[in-house]
Image (tube, rainbow, N blue to C red; front, side, top):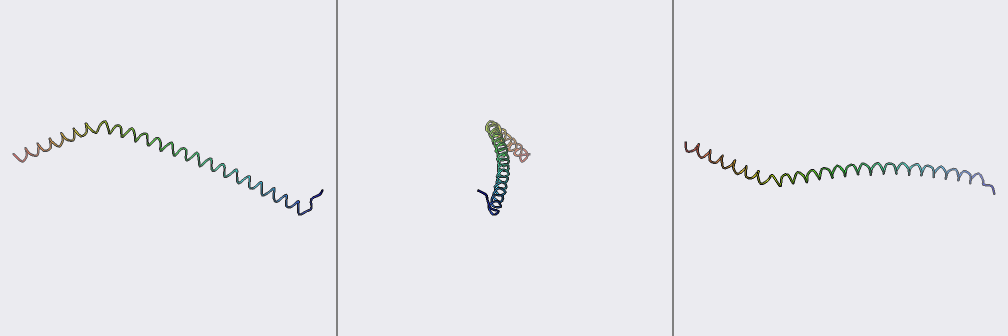
Length: 88
């Protein structure tokens, strides 16, 4: 059974369309993988920043008490020195 000219043209057009569709699918897949890789890098950076922030909060937790005592003593010394200057 032989194909007519119209059928041959239709087969060629469909083959070209499918090849184009396959090429576009490959390009979209590659871009999607690149996007996923970038999102992975961003999430790793965010995780790193979050862990550093957690470490900083731990440092502040342990230094908040001593810092408050130092601030209190500094304020007390300032008050005493101002009081002495007023008395002079």
